[in-house]
Length: 582
Image (cartoon, rainbow, N blue to C red; front, side, top):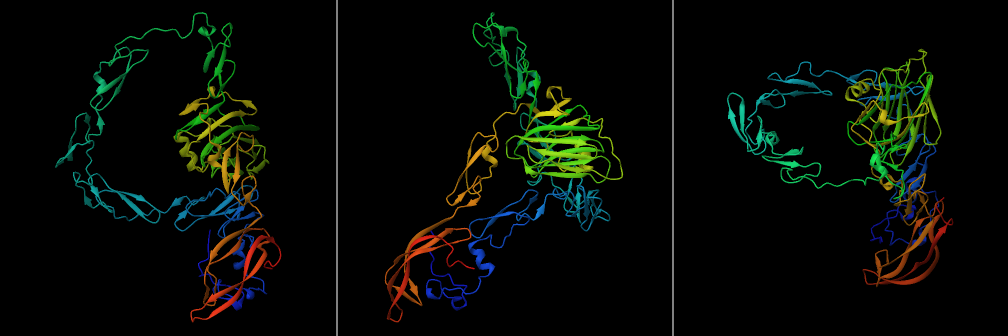
């Protein structure tokens, strides 16, 4: 609870300006003129309509506000349109200008050039790097990369390798200065190499038996037994046991990616229970793949997208960036995450490539269906069942063929493909997808991911349940998981807030009691008195006293005199349009 300590001063009306609030004559608190916006904004931060392009303003606490943007806009005040410049395609602080049909142009900052201002002026011309150092060009600067044995900004200082600052000998080794090789290391037991950083492989001469796996340690090793063997060297044989009785139908089953079980003890048939991500009578098909490794990707056979084609996938992620799909050489289609939205680059011969961004964010940890339809020079994107949007890569060129000898990549790309995609501005970020990609369809046909050309550093199925509250939208409340098809959580709003995501202020006007001395023109009451203030939110109305009782209070003045004043004691508060500022 906040109690005014007596230092606040009046700003209006003019007759009370700069007077202490608690000592000013309350009968003079009458504003005849319309209060300025700066005063009104103290009560309602939304009074100046700060949200642009039809955005909805939601007042917060302490003169703060948030803007709920209309579809197609973003930014703190909804001041930016989601257009071809949304993904900042121009590099090095260049200015992006929207043209038409998903096109843009770049105005370069000083020191850069190129279509996307990607080329930096070479500052290494006339550099001062010494002792054969390599010069690295920076932005309006350069850096000297020193040869072995030298340091300093210009590589002019010779290194003392055995000093505490540079000692390269690891794992407790002793460093000795050398005139021939500048230094040498005397290694501790179990290590070797010039800097004693290599652990000697003690498994080269081990005593592990019965196909056991030898695990190297430091100056030691351990034997990891298999097939039921035990003992220090896995020399003790196992005790035999049968996994299934001889009469079980699971003795000879055809379950490929799961396990076999007998529905009941008298059944002569078996059922395949598929592992996560697999389906089919024999669990022979894979429909879901998990991506967690930084180099993960899946490569499929080249995609036939002539004269038209469509790609549909379900994605689940909490990441802001990551490759979704990439296909093509010069002509291409590239889908990736950018700031949690789906970004698609589409090029079939008319430079520059056309760009489109989803209005929806998809990094909330729940499933989202992404559809991409190619027809001629146009590409249509739809996220979930929302409105479809189309871009056209139009120009003088009729159309390059999208047919490519390259594979269709999902969730990431190989290193060499990624380098070319970045240098050609097909992808903004080649980081691998983090999450789950499932239900892949090409031209309407479901794809069995077991038939992929390559599955690199991925897992079959999507293990683990994402906490739906990790990316919740409850602005003024707490999140609770809930099984629904649209939003898998509910918001429990804080007092004074309501709505699906607790974004709507409730009309609420309460009386806050306090007990304090009353002061007026330097005189003060002999003892504290009980009073109250009205606080809350009433929308277009005011939170004000609706029932007041007047009380005569005796005041003691510094000169010894006594005064009596009439004080309004607030009894009830409510929302009211009476006496609100005009």
